[in-house]
Image 1 (cartoon, helix red, strand yellow):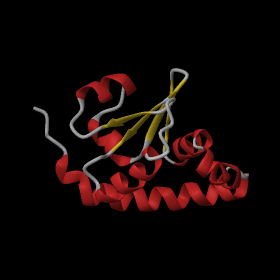
Image 2 (spheres, one colour):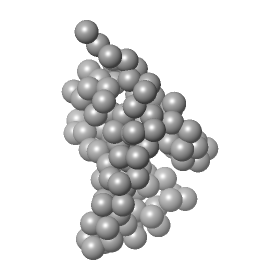
Image 3 (cartoon, helix red, strand yellow):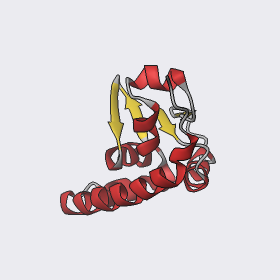
Length: 117
């Protein structure tokens, strides 16, 4: 599984660093900051990658709240989050909250985008 995250965002980096400390061998952490390889691997542009967390698993790309579920499912210490947030009504609320927070983080960090001519 590959996790595509924004290392240049202080909040994103802090959270991902918590997960990285768990040393889960099945997870490859990929910084999307101006990363053309990440764009090619996911078939998403830098703006879309910057907008939310993405996960590649079994050849499929998942974004947002679903991506977090996949990460938490792989990490024993955080698996309880997976079980809680996958409950349908909880997942819907989580998805809405995630999108709101992710939008404001995007606005905060979008200056890092390199405009391509």
